[in-house]
Length: 347
Ligand code: SAH
Ligand code: SF4
Image (cartoon, rainbow, N blue to C red; front, side, top):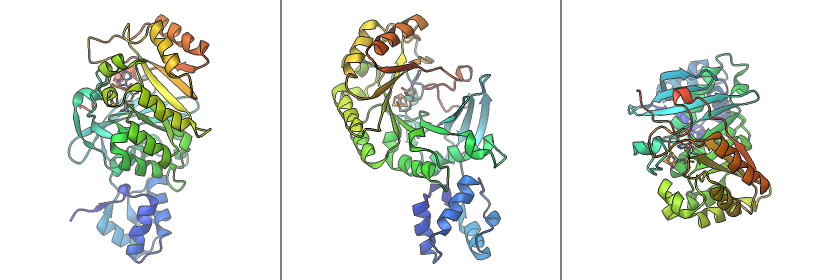
């Protein structure tokens, strides 16, 4: 009989599990701490549980994260891990260290069904959604890998972004459960402002997310008009810009919420002054922050990264319109670890 993987369980789920076993529900917090705070997978080491309970858990349960198949480290310290799943699929997880923070970029699906033309993951097609264990397992794995010394563990990863492979809002339930654990003080205790879901703009799920979670939202926009966006991102035909901006307006009803716009700079495609002006108009209401991303173009000869000069001019148009705009530094390029370069292949 296969064992129950406790990485799939939030603290609430585990509380119910223990109640069914006639155990006190506070055992859940203890076990969650062992697994996620201390990185312990061996039940015999969970010394504040009774021997009988440790024995039961060892017989029926397991703590099983994706396994490392390959590690690449770039000269800027960015690390990319190829992780192998139980069905022999592969996903990628990237760690980006900076002076004052460490960001883990995680995957939510094997492949992606949405087929954006500039995105390496999109060219793979879609295989399946990740389980909660496979999502939170990326963080569990990375924390153990980066700080074998448990005392420093909590400081290494301060931010998590769903910007790896897949569209997180197409795997809504599992992503939200994994986020529960990320924010849980007994597990990782991350701030809700430091966990970011990035979406290509699935309007109904964005509305739901606004009601059900306070995590940060990033929208992959990449084009300032429907004609161009539909060409680059087929999902725009279903949810055009007007609807996308309207749902962002809902987020702004909450004074504390911000929406980050991701905009890849593609030479002559979307980086002209007229595009910047269209973008200003589109984003004229709301507390948007814009990240201009130098295109990490890997797949299509049709796309070339914008020149630095074009990026600078584009940014200035937005700044002049008082839109908070930064140019994101591309990290880990030489190991194909930058956004949109995640292929999940062993090559
Ligand atoms: N599906 C979600 C999250 C994964 S993609 C989304 O689309 O937002 C993560 C980020 O990488 C997105 O902003 C995506 O648009 C960006 N990206 C994809 N291809 C890229 C490329 N070739 N260069 C730079 N960024 C890219
Ligand atoms: Fe999927 Fe996001 Fe890539 Fe589009 S950019 S294909 S939504 S992973």
